[in-house]
Picture 1 (cartoon, helix red, strand yellow):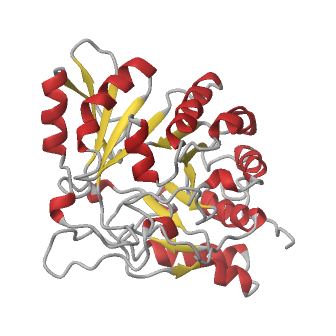
Picture 2 (cartoon, rainbow, N blue to C red):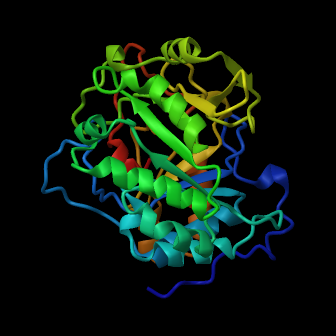
Length: 348
């Protein structure tokens, strides 16, 4: 496609804070997550069915870039690229270079982050940093090789991810964040091991409560390892000390230990929802806006683009969609419905 001129920072410099993306609940929307593929080279038990034959959807890099530019012109300040596994897209460095050249409405560089399973990261860390990537998060659900292979269903995967984490640190993508989804019966015995990993490797470890977003629909309230259980296990290893949040919209409750070595974050959307400060929306790999992970509705931004919509048309569609953002999710409440798409098709 021919990339049409996007809304420009120069013409939008006069956009007042009150005119920037805000939902009906008064929350400023400053964070955008873009899934650039729903393909993945892992089949993690809490995400994928493990079956082959899936049909995948992804757009061109130019199409993601055009939609991102419109979002930025409306006040987006942070973009996280996700998947599936984003490192499977060969054009990823190109997309990062284009995004890193853009500026927010306040003239600041974009905060560019990426979430990856780390399998291809050892080779890609330096090129990603050179292309403009600011921060990286690696999904890693055990620090035991056999257990890790059982979760990912890919033999030999642990050593590749560990090498990727170390390569990211060498490349200057520091501090590296390591995300661990805790699933009862699979890896709840890894909590203390991850605390030691944080201290020894110099990475931030973040534990995430298991959410009902998997393809196999295995989620039950009993499968969730709660924030309270995590902090109890960590305190049995070494005394936790709370850290202040980096921002009001931060999703993780942050801790260090009493000697100041290591950092742990706990993301607890099930037992301690943080919806009241949510500042994000998502763009799926097929170009649909999701206002919440647990939305029942997709909003087809790519359809507007396909039909020849202008940037003003895209912007108007984004504004209408953001205005419909849900006040909160309803996990665990009577009548709760799992989202219409699983995490791999929404974007992590």
